[in-house]
Amino acid sequence: MRRRPNTTFLLTFITFLILFAIFSLNLSRNALSRFRYSDSVSDLDTRHNTNDDNLFLNEYSHPKRRVSSIHFKVSISTVSILLPDWEIMLIVSPNTPLHYDYNYRCVFRNGAFSPARFSGVLPFMNVSTFKCDLPESVRRRRIFSQPALVTEASENEMNDPSPAPELLRWNFLVYESFSTEDDVVLFAKGVNHRQGYDRSPSELRCVFTTGEGNAVRTAVTSSVQEVFRCPRPDHALLFPESEKIGISLEIIAENLVVPSVASYRPRPKPRPNSVMKAQAQPKYFLCACTMVYNVGKFLREWVMYHSKVGVENFILYDNNSDDNLETVVNELHEEGYNITTLLWIWPKTQEAGFSHSILHSKSNALCSWIMYVDVDEFVFSPSWIGSSYKTRNELPSLKSMLPHRQMSKVGRIGQVSMQCNEFGPSGQRKNPTEGVTQGYTCRRRVEQRHKSIVLVDAVDPSLRNVIHHFEVNEKEGYRSKQLSMEKGVVNHYKYQAWDEFKNKFRRRVSAYVVDWRQNVNLKSKDRTPGLGFQPIEPKDWVHKFCEVRDQRLKSLTQTWFSIYLRHNETRMAWQKKLRDYFIP
Image (cartoon, rainbow, N blue to C red; front, side, top):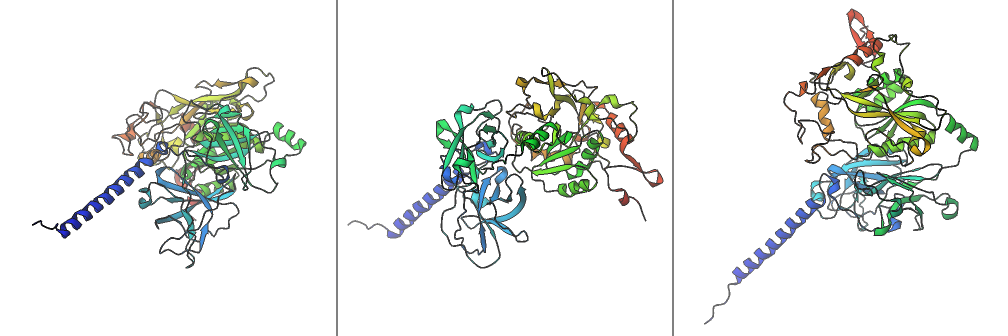
């Protein structure tokens, strides 16, 4: 007689198999999710074909959708971009009213949420931006959907079940555009993959699109780094005057339009007389331009020093600072310094930002020459030592390093370059309150790299630049000139007290400088000798990179900027306001 199968045993065995299958599938999904996105966005393969009519900022409309157990009053129309380090940037649709006293959140499809922080208004798009972090629970998903930007203000539930679009990826995106008098300039990540390799312009086209899905294409005339140029479309014939126009790039061979958050803004034609005047007479002879992040504590010294030696205007591309930069800039404004701050929120785009600054200066007739140095870099001439320039009313000028009139069209100087001396911590364990020029006085023996002052009209139309040095237009007879170390030099206070220096691990603004946390490109000059891949203070850091005692600029600035107070005490002019030192 046959024995009947044990029903309890069979049910237990089947249940075990089902649970094991579910566990394996979940584990596989987690592994795939981690593979698809790492801290380095360059690991992503985000290229996918996209229709023309859903690419652009003025086209998108973020759907409202049901989120269980959370109630909101408003779901704001946005487009979202996944940045490095699991950060999300949300760009609010143009003309969307916002209440800045509300608390905003990013809400995701699985019900997870994270606080949304207001990041500022993009000056060239005139749109508001927020940032939030991608929650851990969402990172495990295979597809990252765009979050809803909401405010907790009532018990009205979002009830549109429409699926959310996928997050745009930062490593493949058209992120900015600029309309000149002659053409349109686009800024894009991921089209030209690496330094030294640029796609031929013939491989690309610019695509202009409207909300109705109408599109027109124009040829790309220049493709260099993250900068692309193309002719403007015939706006009068193709688009109504009031309509917003999206813009992107098409990779012809792949039949692929690059995702974009940029828009095309036709440039109004100025009167002929004003154009001729603007081209002939820029407002300032010498400007300084740099990209900044959280440099509020250092800015006063940098601005006050360079202003005294000839810089008339300062252009700051703010890489989304969250310190007291705005307060310091406003104080300097009140004291009479000319400073323009432009929010440039895009990560690792220093070269693109500098290319943009040339367009910005030309468009507004701002500068004849622009000096590109960082806030920890100070330009001076050793020939000033021992000269007759000893009072504040009679100081030397960086303008003396530059040609004022060049009659010949052959061999004209379009760029002046100076080599850098790199200073070490000089025994400092914290930021010197009297300023970097006073606190850091010991440097490396061999000069490193160089920084430049460029004639705006001499910059090559491609706008190519690497490490503060532009390619000049040789076809127009321009060339670069290297100054001797006695005529001009840059004091680069690079290796500062450890608490300041370690911040460089998180933010490397150049598109071609590797994140120091990655175990790659170990021989790069950008890397710090003897430093690993973590922000851990090396042994005897305070005495590193000290081969030559150099107090030349310290002595000059003491002569020019020291202020004598009571009881034989002195302060530098960029320290706290004088009234803070006097006791009533």
